[in-house]
Amino acid sequence: MTVPRTYFHVDMDAFFVSVEEVYDPSLIGKPVIVGGQAHERGVVSAASYAARKFGVHSAMPLRTAYKLCPQAIFVDGHPSRYREYSEKVYKVLSDFSPVVEMASVDEAYIDITGTERLYGPPLRAAHLLHDRMKAATRLNCSIGIAASRLVAKISSDQAKPNGVLWVIPGTEAAFLAPLDVRKVPGVGKVTEKNLHAAGIRKVGDLARLDEKLLEQRFGKWGLALAGKSRGLDAGGWFDREIGEDVGPKSISHEHTYNEDTADVVQLESTLARLSEMVGRRLREHGLHARTLQLKLRYSDFTTITRAHSLNRATQIDTEIFDEIRALFHANWRRGARPLARRTPTRARDRTPDPRRSSRSCPAAGRSWPPPDPRTTGR
Ligand code: TTP
Ligand code: MG
Ligand code: MG
Image (cartoon, rainbow, N blue to C red; front, top):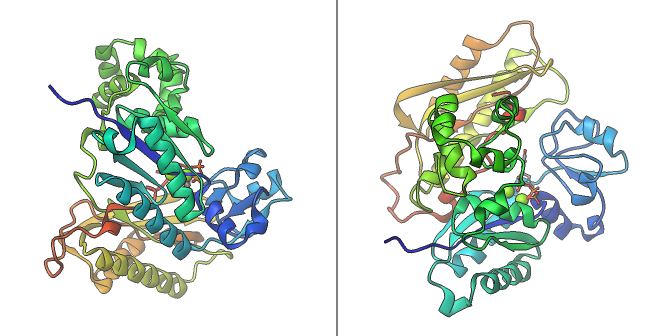
């Protein structure tokens, strides 16, 4: 018999904004938008809860955010600060439990099964962790507690901001039923649209459906969806255990120009710089990547992504750049004006660096949030 497990999903509240608030407390409580200045080309990285009341959210163009909330304070992002605070968050979590997996820069799953004698019942343990997080980082987080990681993730979202929510085992179906299908991890815009077209709007609608029917309609993914609607860890990442595959899935950097450009020299030099940044991070993590990907966005916001797999994985800047440059020349529309390009190197087929010890580097368990389909057009 398998032992019932207890998982926490911990997610920092308005993470980039909260870090900026530590550096500048005058921002606290105000509508704050991190990602660039109001007139700039880029997108919102994070919005404070006060700004969200106006409809501002991550991945929205800064200019749209300005229209919705002109009184907001626009702040440039500071990636090194967020990395530093992500490390602090990881330290608090790993001191609390040995089984931690960072799922993005500001969130993690931890398995606290068997810690009752140390921390007491789950709710008490979560409050203790919540207090420790605040004391060590000065940041608020929300914690979802459940018998599956999937339900823990959904419940941390429901607990926001600055809350703790325990879905007591046995109550998963009742907890999930009234939620929109979009709340299920893995259900993006496209799946949501398909589900709506089939008259399925709430998780409860999904749970009522016959698994076979979902499988027929949506394939293997439909079967996972049926499991998810019942609160089970099913499909994609949820099929494996916490920490089973530590290491970033992909590493990427991107740049958005303030002014459109079609200048090949300028474009290539940006690609070279981005390739070097990706190479550096691969080396820092002791990883090699086999699949290299270029993302290119034009002034009309059409976006393409093109990938190529090498015969041999690499972490060498020039090899990365050669590949990215070839992808660029093979794919860019001459005369059209690209806006942004990105060189994510997917580390799917990565191999550890033999020169490094096999001890896993804590940072290797973390990755930046996966590219958002709404911003990449994928
Ligand atoms: P999230 O945890 O999704 O959001 P959040 O922490 O800002 O707010 P919440 O309280 O709802 O959790 O993302 C963590 C950080 O990742 C976020 O602060 C900024 C960054 N991010 C982006 O840069 N672009 C994005 O599209 C998203 C979703 C997040
Ligand atoms: Mg967050
Ligand atoms: Mg998050």
